Image 1 (tube, one colour):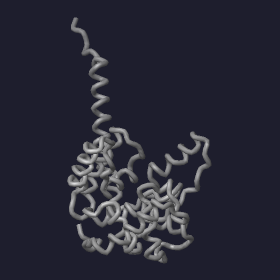
Image 2 (cartoon, rainbow, N blue to C red; image 1 turned 135 degrees about the horizontal axis):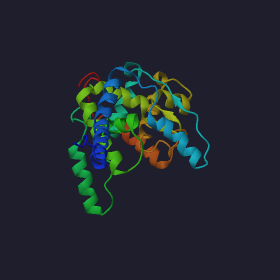
Image 3 (cartoon, rainbow, N blue to C red; image 1 turned 60 degrees about the vertical axis):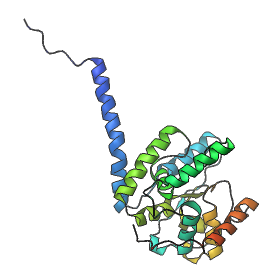
Image 4 (cartoon, helix red, strand yellow; image 1 turned 90 degrees about the horizontal axis):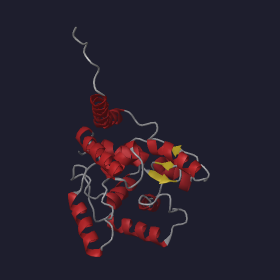
Length: 240
């Protein structure tokens, strides 16, 4: 009598599950990016993780402030200062500024220090929308993968709109509108040019710096943005 068909070997079963997990990890970012092309995100993973981090470290949990504003309602001064300070080649690259990456690596080799940040606005947007903060290679790999699909599926204008709305701008503060209300007690449309520059200068270290009582380093960065803004030209925000 012939023996019935045996069940799949455990190894084959695990390989199948592993393949399904890898496939899900590859597909999920594409679905997420496709969704945010048309849907303004109501929340991001970072907004959920920050309170958890605070509780685990015994720190008070900051109230979450997050108010969406369409890009055309944002002050152009802030958008331009953010581009000047964070990614001057935003409209000329496809998510990865290889020139800046080469400069960063050359500087690291020359000084012996770690590689300085060379994240584009697209990369920062992917991190803020879908991932978490940190320096692990896993996070960086997922960030690069999400950035690739963002640049492929989203217009530059939409990436910029997402960025200025979800980027962390203080403890519990996300996006320009919430930052204007939290730091200056006003709507973003009423910010002065100098306030826009100060908030853009805040972006590299939003939880360490206070725009209402700026440190010398933050003040110097703000002054630099005000000076450079006149020297850098960008296309219309609707350009891809």
